[in-house]
Image (cartoon, rainbow, N blue to C red; front, top):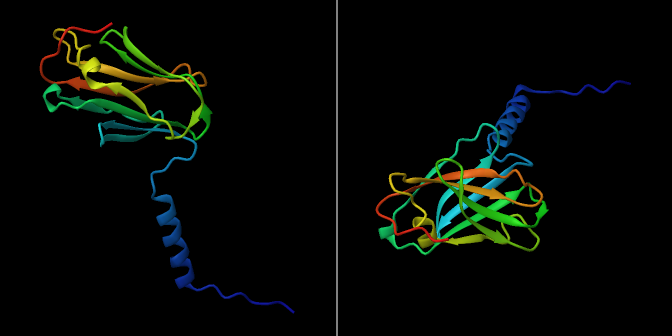
Length: 157
């Protein structure tokens, strides 16, 4: 004896609604993502893919921020040998900070003194490029442009 299953339009509407809700979130499974903070204030939170635009972040030396904090998540995998690199307008490396030890996700943030970044500002050029890399991701990724507003001191080596 066959059993007849009744399917109403109400059930279909509920199913379509639930699917729409679940697929509307921007979380990209397996994607790299990062957060950037000036001291305790988040100024960027972004997933990285081929369609991502690189955000431009403002740094004003007169605001007296002490730390630029970067949290980078490589698909949740454990990585080591992380680096934050500042490059100039011609992609020359101006400064890099190395962070040893294995970590995953946002567990271990990377901090860079704002005064050191501001000191890298070159005459006539206000924008620096902020990059991330690790041993497992050696090609790295530009994660932001840093627009330094105001005057800077001489660069630190």
